[in-house]
Length: 596
Image (cartoon, rainbow, N blue to C red; front, top):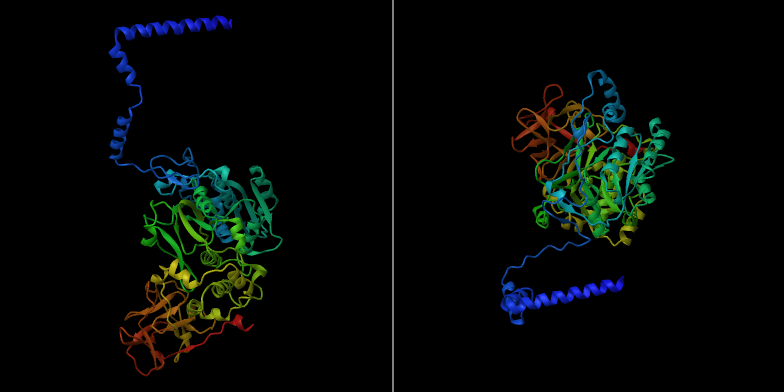
């Protein structure tokens, strides 16, 4: 059979050659032109063709590295979800959900217990849909396919269970499985029944992708997060609060900068979730980008992205540097985080850890990037619904002040430390504990000075919060006449202030007068009109004020009148004269906890 097939093929080849020879004999020119059309160009023709091509403007295509994200306008990115969520039910698409009036009392009680409306939360699906709040450009980013896997670490203490589980469900539903190592829940000694065995049984539905570890005693958020990082199995740890909902394709944008440089910490843009109705909405409006800074009392603030930083980016949706962050939500290489010592173990419970980590990262060679294409919703609770137990027992000072003082004394230069104590005079009395280990870590890591940080990273902060002049006077402002003290009466600015009996416990009655004439209480200022004396927002970028203190009188330089007690407990401006109702003295306040 094989021989017959070969014979047949040979005959066909001979016939084809005879036919071609006949065509060439009859039509030689036509056959030659036909063959030349398929022949390579001659050498001189090829040279001419190359010269012509060289005159044409070359189109340079951006190199698409396996290690770099790249944008393809109009084409969905490689990890974009294939379909949009479109469900019906309470709270779907992030719309506000209002509990019927018959259950209003139950809802109010749950807010009192949890700081969150748990009645509404329990009615809303754990897998509910939320609006895509990203910039439209974000949908077209392609990310490396070999990004590191992440452990999402969530610390909780007596959290409402449906809120906690909605956080977990959103992570599982909206994270590419290839990048999610695990969700690690760290229970900081909760005592609510629904967070016990029932929670352990529930998370079994995730087939090992969600783990739960429990602290044998209360440790606080800061130390619990460090424990979570140590226990985590992922290359990257992502810290989230226990009351969040991640948005579409949230994780790859956080991982990509870390994949490129492991000393980079990344921060998602935070959306707001209402604690009563669970309405999901952007915190930031318009096209402006913001980044984290602080004021000298160590309160977290935000400011517009400087034009200098914006111009460094090719696309508006690219990450950008930030001096600090709010603290709750961020991603970082696990080994890098632990090499920095994690969080300072001397920090108590909650507060100031965001500044400690930010200063440490920047000053010791790392960087912080905010990532516009990663959006995470966060429930802003009505209040902190639990205390701190024995963690604060015997401490000299409020824990937030103790924490701030540890951060300031470890990471700031002497000049900048003084600005903190000028703004918070009573912090001098706080017992921050021993910081020898933290100072040694700073030396070992060969970290830069705080002055370097202020000049190279947080240079725009001083535009809103300049260096502070020294205080000329500080303490309770006591009237000679009534023996009452100037008091904010617990009101929030802008508001009229007055006088009340002096109680010596600071806060509402701790007044500062600086060398530039600014009269301050906390982060607010005192000013006056012809009719009243008010607590106001201090003018942005200014440290000066209208007051001068002379011969026991506070004189308003603009009106050339004196601060005086009016009718009842009110304050006013009056023509200056020798009258005890317009004479004042600053009485030094030593907090009670400092004398224990």
